[in-house]
Amino acid sequence: MAKRKKTEDAIDLHGVRHKEALEWVKDELHFRADQGSFSLTIITGNSSVLQKRIFEEILEGTVYNYYIPSWNLGQIIVEHMEL
Image (cartoon, rainbow, N blue to C red; front, side, top):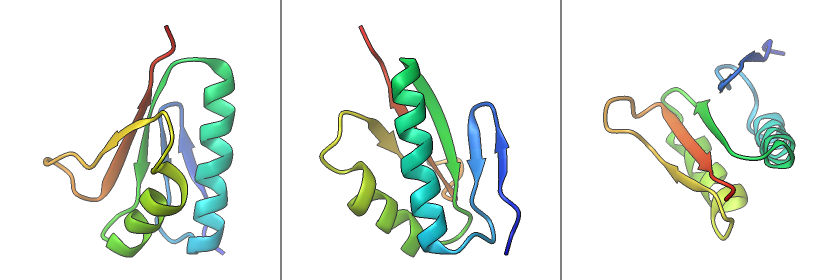
């Protein structure tokens, strides 16, 4: 099993199986939402399949803003602003 890497504003999913990666992303987003506003970079590498699953299974239909930046197609940036 790959070792998960986490920094304050990013999680690195390189080498993590999709099922575990999806659970980790869900948990991290719920934790951060409980803390208030946040910006989180999810590093997926070249896995367009994992990116699609994160979009469809986790992010679509939520209050989060998210996008793949043009300068790095191997990551997803998720932002949430509480007013």
